[in-house]
Image (tube, rainbow, N blue to C red; front, side, top):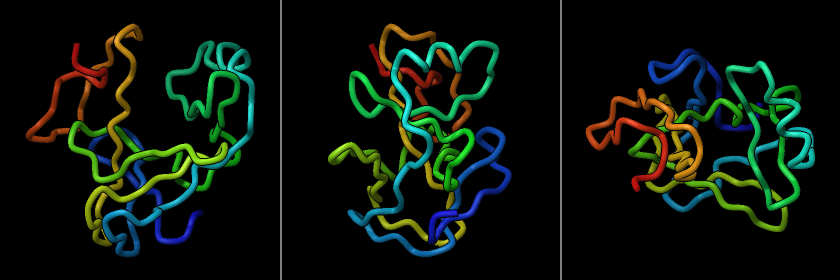
Amino acid sequence: MAPGITVRSSTIDGQGCFATARFLKGRKIAEYVGERISRREIARRLRGRRRIHICAVDSYWAIDGSRMGNGTQFINHSCEPNCNLRIIRGHILFFALRDIEPGEEIVLDYEYSYHSDRKQCSCGSRKCRGKINKLE
């Protein structure tokens, strides 16, 4: 488990990633870790799976946190996120968009592409778009 976070049941979806420490705005929360795989391998691994824990690094590589994650693979989507994701020198890092207090769920706007399947959102935010996808 990455320092300052824990995984527990979430009202958004299944398991969630929660802060156990205070994260100040702009500070790194954690790195998304797992097995480095090719984007071609993603399609094979997705077959028959309802939940995925794969994050793209670039046009060729992705990280699959399914087997060797550190808790960040359980960061759920919210239309009102408190963190963002940055890819820096091949590493996927999460940063606080605002101060995050212990006990808060750490949430990210997944912003799926316009062309991916429309996914229903259950974040419960006042700003909920109803779908996880970007607005068209």
